[in-house]
Image (cartoon, rainbow, N blue to C red; front, side, top):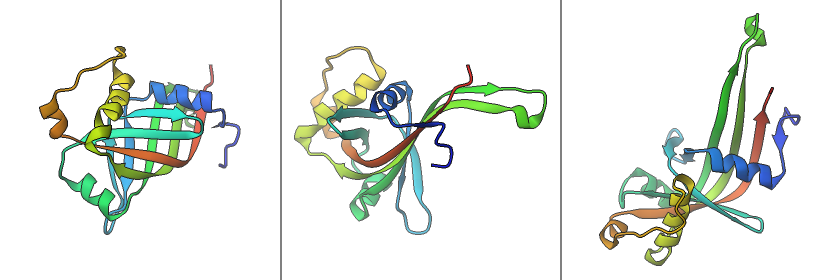
Length: 157
């Protein structure tokens, strides 16, 4: 990382950023160009393993691309605040961001509720959730185990 003065290595700091973010952009291998999409997400962290959870339709491009090549990249950012100045070069942006790579895997029916619970916890304050069986059948849930990541923060105030 070129700007190591902005790098975050403390996992507690990284987890706090993850809690603030509301979208994770996933990039998949496609034939000619990468395929990137913004997704709602949840995550778990135990020991040294960071896992992201996502959901979507049972069929479609995401699922096809995961089956072809499970290697993905991810990006999350938040805490944006424009800092103005007298000259154009004095402007900057406060931010917090996380980028990395991982391995995607479609989860089994038995693993869906646990993964969707993490996803719900990202957006709702409740700690317990009920899931409709018909809705569970209509959705595919997949995880991305992070294999590496970097995090940055610029805060002027």
